[in-house]
Length: 232
Image 1 (cartoon, rainbow, N blue to C red):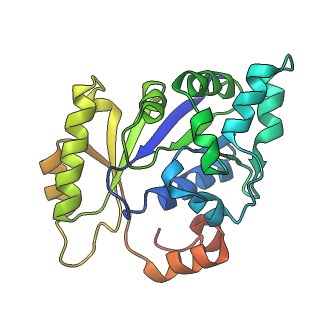
Image 2: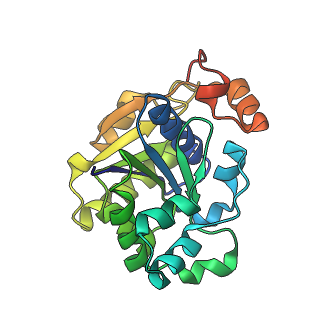
């Protein structure tokens, strides 16, 4: 088995990136795929775990330490550290405390992705919203990059800058797709204008559902489970 690695990124906070990553991974798992959701957004703390109502006692940083020090099968170690969600997917946060940040290295993340790719159909990574060596390592091993944005002028300007940086690092434009969240919000830029301005394909347009999203977050249940007939 060889995973498809899908990295989800935004260089602007508050656009719904983590919410999308959680629900995208959940939907893939509900379809019968073997999915690993990997939280590499170390600035966001436990946001993703809260959305899933999961208590995270172990982390990628700890798994990497054991992989380095153990003669046990690396696949067995990964299974030991991931947390199973009711949707059927596995979840693993990068860290559970700030002290573990220094334990993450690009080389270790590269090794982990290669090992995990043997066990899953999809690895979904939430990369946060800042460029770092860890983030670039994940992108280097991704099959596709999903940029999440909202249709407002500031988000469009920042996204254009993000795409310029990615292209400067030789990521092909065909690899980069846009997820437009709250795409029909009143008073915002029309989605077609966003598409024309950025020059990339909009692979998904998500409507607004503030009430449904709020209830989902309050329950700690992914929207696709908590409100399967909702507009999202």
